Length: 183
Picture 1 (cartoon, rainbow, N blue to C red):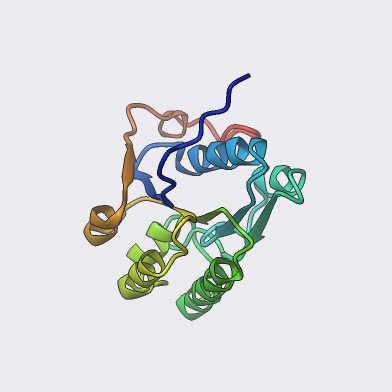
Picture 2 (tube, rainbow, N blue to C red):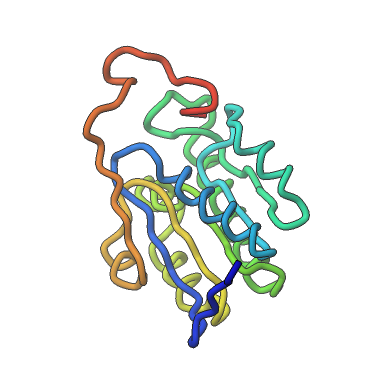
């Protein structure tokens, strides 16, 4: 089977945003594809963390090619949180430090910052911090930023931007989140 090689390798910045379902799922699909090419992937979850989600263990099964760090305190502003804003912000700031560490390590081909756009919109991360990561990423590293409400300046810096648009969702019909589909 033929494997394509680009003539000019580029470390892409990819933004997956919008109000529709599938942003994290899309990023995980990229991770799965990359592991198939023996690429190393690091995923850092900025919001998820207080409830179990299947990707936490499935990514661990892709080791040593992929790793996941669940740093969030939960869905601030969507589901009531037992943690004060300051704890959510401290977790996001810790995740940003981890992202810089993983980025600077030279060990990864892809860095996925899951729901970092949400974190920024909620004031847990600052625009200048995200722009700094984009501007200072290694030349050939791919950086993927997921989450609703991607900032205009982040979108402008990205090579590829996908907006997930909700047409219809089971949750709005009163159907609870389903294991393996929603979490």
